[in-house]
Image (tube, rainbow, N blue to C red; front, side, top):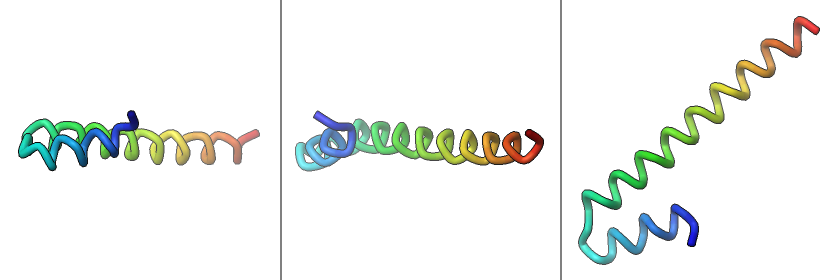
Length: 47
């Protein structure tokens, strides 16, 4: 089961706190991915 599906199932089961925590984990992964992409792009310019 993927994390987005887990968020949906938790929300449908009225477990809002767990759904919010899982959604925040997805947000952190997204921001980390964007930061890593920016870092790689910046370092590729120097090579």
